[in-house]
Length: 193
Picture 1 (cartoon, helix red, strand yellow):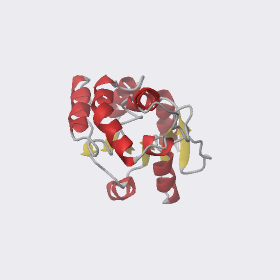
Picture 2 (cartoon, one colour):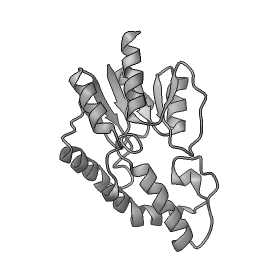
Picture 3 (cartoon, helix red, strand yellow):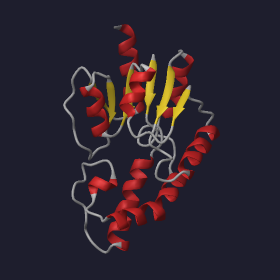
């Protein structure tokens, strides 16, 4: 199978780290409570920050978050099993778009753990076009908007949903997973069909 895969929140645990620093920034730096929707995956929709405040958050914390983040629990074991079974992985990520150095930091983390994907797409704004052109069997992502757009265009998805994020109704194109064990189970079940 050819698997499309996001990095942040799927391979790298950066989304949890982002949310921690978002709270610190909102409470300690902005001295307020600007949280408007904790079910949103990205800070631009989670908080009622101005463009200047968003820019300050990016400059102040993005590299810190990148350097503090690790691989998701269970990822290495499942990835190695799937790779040895002949599955291909195509990275389709927005990483490197806001802060270029974050791409290099992800490459460092992957290399330190001997992770080599088959293909990489960095700074991606529209994952749909790449999923189509790469003819992926399914895409794993943690952003409900991306999942919904892909599913609406008949691309199978695994929605790697963190606890507080928006819940989507499962259907033939959307399956919710919460860890790499569930991803492995889904793939093994698809192989049998």
